Image (cartoon, rainbow, N blue to C red; front, side, top):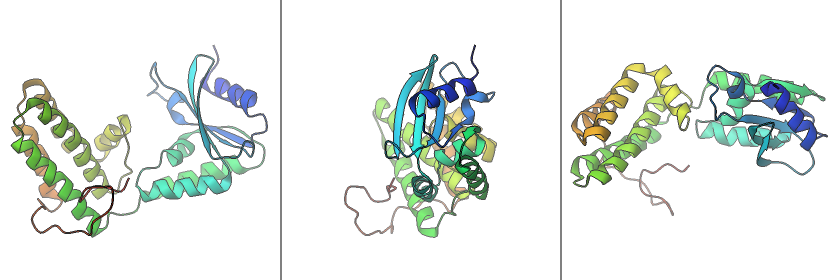
Amino acid sequence: MSTPQDSARSYVVAHHPTALAAILGGGATSARRTSTSDLDIVVFVSDPPPPFRVTDEHDGWPVELFAHTRETFVSFVDREVALRGSPLLHMCAEGTLLFDHSGIGEWARTTSRERFAEGPPPLSPTELEDARYRVTDLLDDLAGATDPDERLLIANRLLTTVAELVLSVRGSWLGTGKWLLRRLREVDPVACASLLSTYRALVASDAPEAFHRAVSDVLDSVGGRLLVGYRRPPASGREPGQPVA
């Protein structure tokens, strides 16, 4: 059976024979690989014009391919870093260089490792206030909800929001889905365990009190509630305190 590296390399050769370099993200080759893991491949190409993204299948593997030039790579990374979560940096920093015909692949890996190690930009005082406001607002929604189904959806949003708050305050990269959990476990295992156990209790028995306290503890540790007195200029298309991305 072909290795993930072999399958990824043969996919790129078959579909992008003029590619300058290709990097396979680390997920498919790590101990965290699951039965649904895919091949995340970053390629540097010039034809058709990048950037573009393709979802495909090859050798029984789902394939997610991200095509870039040096310029679009830098532009995408800059945008992701500003949002404190860069899947592109992560893929290249931890990935395997499949081939490199011009040196751009090694440049991308070195650049990604350096920038990923630096971490995301620090949370500004305004951004911290915005995050405290969002958590406070959701906490009050949770406390006031009388519909059990509403409580589930509010709690789900609150779990993600407070996890992102912890990571941002601690200077960690953000993530989505499994990566949000993995980074929270690494950065603050105590808060992670408390939030998850009380969230499970809420889901299982519709008892929100313990989850409310766990979130409140996190909020208190970063400055406490913020609601009355919060003021921001209006922004079209989003609610007060809602993040831009």
